[in-house]
Image 1 (cartoon, helix red, strand yellow):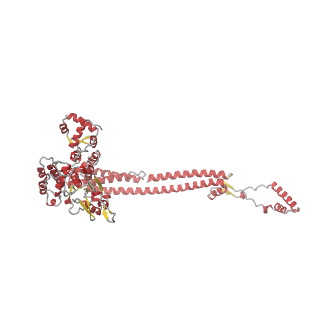
Image 2 (cartoon, one colour; image 1 turned 30 degrees about the vertical axis):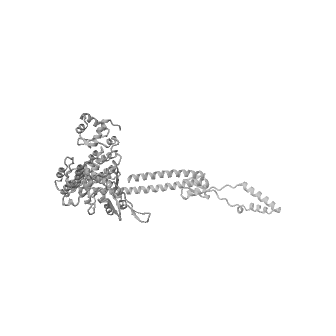
Image 3 (cartoon, helix red, strand yellow; image 1 turned 90 degrees about the vertical axis):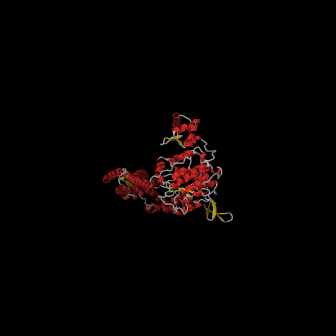
Length: 622
């Protein structure tokens, strides 16, 4: 997508500023507001920029893609034009702080693993608050692996044993230790044995000891879990080695951003506009400790902690984190120190009981001229959670009643009594649904009415299903019987065709067995007329035989005997069979059998069609 120089300047400014008002952009670019607004409108039509509810303008993922080649020679994330735009998409300062801290630990694990304690990172809270999105953003920026712990095994988490060439054993380094970032999503859903294996990764040292073998730890660990679903049994000292964000105090803001406004989708679109990773940590300069003195800030932060907070906060990580902030985000020493300390404080403030009241004023007094963000105000966690829970109960009851109503009206073949009962239940359901839409109605009474209505609807559904299932079974049984008759008729037709050619008599006997034709008895047939020519021939044969016998030839006596006693030497011929079909004599059995086979085939086809119609009817009934 080709851009003019003026369009490129505007997009580059929005990428670096994150978002800006029209007046701010006009002042920065030295342009008139009217012309700039027209340019922004045309860029918005092309999907390169978008306006926000705060009357500001910001870059989209398509706009970032149109800039082409950003960050190829960047020496840090802070130098990327799109870095500020990406941070602006995250809805709270706490999430921006969590992302910076995760990237800082990843840089330290890769470039200076022995510089100092390196905490693990995590976010826990209600579902739908974007905890996993922060991990996905970090992976897109510097690389790493995303693990859904519900599908992991202990071997994947901590490596597998393999045999060496000398016959010994060693542990194969797992992918979870390679980095730069390892995201462990839904940690609370993992089985207990896998949780124990994963907690071996939660340490601040440069190595991990697994089965007596020291393995290098080069990954920043970022974990998410929902404590409401299942509490994660953190091992002793794990919280002291980690920096964790509790999303519950900001749940309303996060739900609105991620569930209603689609922040997660916009973030992913923005990330897809650039090649991943955005920056190669291995190509960045090595950390420099010069000018980094966290002593005063660490002492001030320590003074803001409660007794409980002093035992759960990794203050020793402030110095290495400041070094990483200097390399990644803020090239000035003072800015890196203050920003790292303030980001740590933002995460600590999300967990009740760790910081003293008024910590914000103290931290802002230390910032000097740095533009630190204001922390998000807590939203009254219990009240909001109660309202969300009540809303969820109303939605579940509403969905259940609607589902049962839809199921009831799926059946059409109802009796009159069933239709009357369905209409009565629908009236009750409409009254209940109307009450559920009113926020002030007592939920407990509605739930009782809903339970009674659900039982009555399920009872009616059960009766309808039972009746229809009986009808369906009857139809299927009739279809099965018709199909069997059709098969028998077809088999008989094929047999008759074969016998019509080879043995018509056997074919007629087959029909006789089934009662389809009747054999006519020989006595009922008219007596055959005597053949005079046959008697003359027999007499002449006797005379010839006598002459031969008198001439001394013995065969003559045989001819005389056969002529004198024909019934002895000639077997009595069986009279031919005769058959009747529906009172009509069958004159040609072969033609009759062929015609009968054709009729049986047509009958078989008709039976098959009727059986299929019954099966279709049964399917519609079910």
